[in-house]
Image 1 (spheres, rainbow, N blue to C red):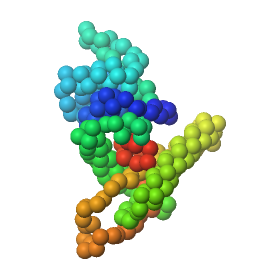
Image 2 (cartoon, rainbow, N blue to C red):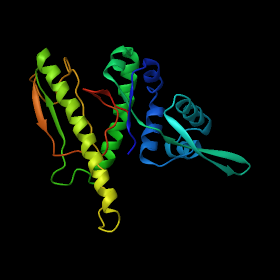
Image 3 (cartoon, rainbow, N blue to C red):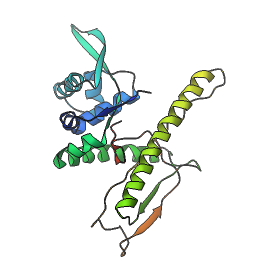
Image 4 (tube, rainbow, N blue to C red):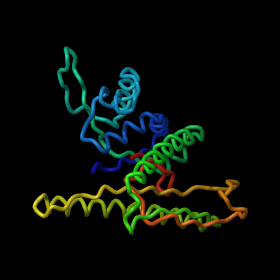
Length: 228
């Protein structure tokens, strides 16, 4: 699994706010490598547009060129993601609001499509799968305490992931154990003035299932915005 790379520079955060760039990084997190031509076919955009965004991500240090393949008189370049970018609290605080909203909007669009696809394939069928949504009232101290819990939860997830990867590596193919691709989406956000669907009151708590599916995608949580 690729390591996390904390981003504090608002210029880099702004460069990542484009929805297509978020989708490119998400695909390259799951694949060993891909070329702009392959990515353009997967995402249904022109090769010229895709090549531009891949070159920008490469120039900014998020991608690395790993292979050049001769293809019908031309050279096809294959890239892979260098790290799973995660925006630091400091970087997020210094990012203009319009960039934050564009980034979160693109991330939520990706999350929605991914989770819905997983649900359609039975991703929430296991008895210990989880999906819940809560609306609670917090004072400033409670907000900061919950933000800390979110950060600790994310750190625990990373630790569990690393330990699982090590056990799978040691087991190899001999014991026939395969990795369970697991998705996690963490969110914490202010919801003042946002109406609760189907509820007349201000507060609500809905537990919609058990445990969610697939790896974390861009989210605004205690540790800022994670782009995976």
